[in-house]
Amino acid sequence: MTLIEVGDGVHAYVQPDGGWCVNNAGLVHDGTAALLVDTAATHARALALRDAVRRVTPAPPGVVVDTHHHGDHTLGNAVFAPPATVVAHATARADMAARGTALRQVWPGVNWGDQPLLLPDLTFTDRLTVHVGRTEVRLWHPGPAHTTGDVVAWLPAQRVLFTGDVVMPGHTPFVLMGSVHGSLHAVAALAALEPEVVVGGHGPVAGAAALDATTAYLRWLDDLADRGLAAGLTPLEAALEADLGEFAGWGEPERLVANLHRAYADRTGAPAGAYLPSAPVFAEMVTWNGGPLPCAA
Image (cartoon, rainbow, N blue to C red; front, side, top):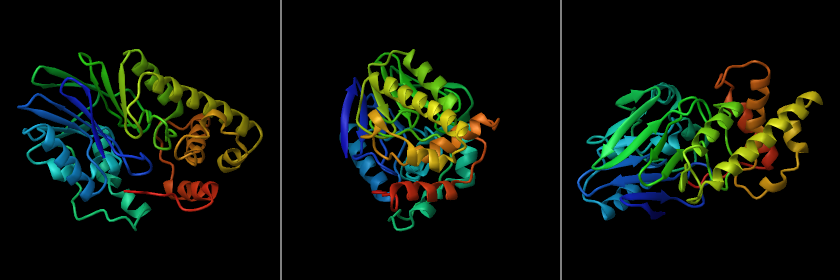
């Protein structure tokens, strides 16, 4: 785990290698106040994050922002709250209440630790600004993308953007619970901010080029879905036949199967984020991968 200073009073907490369940977090502080963007999947990793924060600032985080409902970003909430107030999109809170511990069922062999699921205290639906000393943190719901309850954190003075899993530099997008077209819209809106530093939900700290790369993948995915449907292929069949090309080196390529399921649903009139049973989709990803999906949490 590495704490990287990416701006004045702003740090990215990066957990290699950024694969399944191994996420990034962010810290904004001024010595007397602090805000945390996301936590971590396991109790041990959340404690390590807390220790890293303490090495930088004596102020415990007064606010924790959950960028979406997935457990790798939220299961560590209880390490920080109370005293922190946990903030999220209203849909993310509802999804957390319904299936916030799903990762534990997908990867039962991980030592998740004994920590309760702690739901957000404060929710919003569009935009919310939090001030950490003189630093303005603009929380924004860019629309359905990775999930239907995504939140990004934009620091305009520092030009730093925390994207959650809407963007994951060097890692394959995952839109099973969101929208392909929504993701394209969201990433375009993020690019319009002209960030200098992009901290994704997984992967290394990057620049604005990470937004362009994500857009390229999503457009390729969109075209692949069109061709797969025209050929009468199932999402798994289309994924097995696909040439990953420039995206072959990205982490978690098996997500293509899940992404095609969402792309197919988009094209058959399903609303963004309409429920798709994840268990059979994960089983198909295992088939594509030729074995179990690794989780290093």
